[in-house]
Length: 213
Image (cartoon, rainbow, N blue to C red):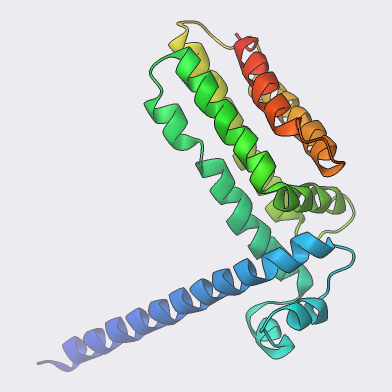
């Protein structure tokens, strides 16, 4: 085996090891962010620091500082993992619904369930989105998530129009503003004790979707 061949093989092994190490580091960041997310959601942005997260979990501040540059970095990772997964939940509905009525029904069930079962997490999302108007540390993540959620809403609206053999009567940005505003208002109502809010979001989102063509 030539010297150049040995050098190439060694370089390849080094590259693989580096990629493996980077992947493990990224995986560990995601795990830690998921663990911390519950505490952040319960306390809110302003009342949560790395020490608070450490005190409420089995994570030491040393571990948190090793994997994250600070509170903003941890929060950005945590909310990205959660909210991006939320956006992907609607993909099967868009892909497999065969009638407009089916799409409306399934979309309503999903959005109602997430409001009911994960209201604390969604409350955190709106808290962080507001904070990003002042804080730059995780602003890029919030902007990226807003764009991802707008894409999700638009995919639903477009598919509904397609199933009705027509075109949407609103554009992407308007669709997102309408559905986001509706969800936020129902979330506020639910947080204030309105047990009917999940049913309201189901019915109103269906009506809004039907009116989007």
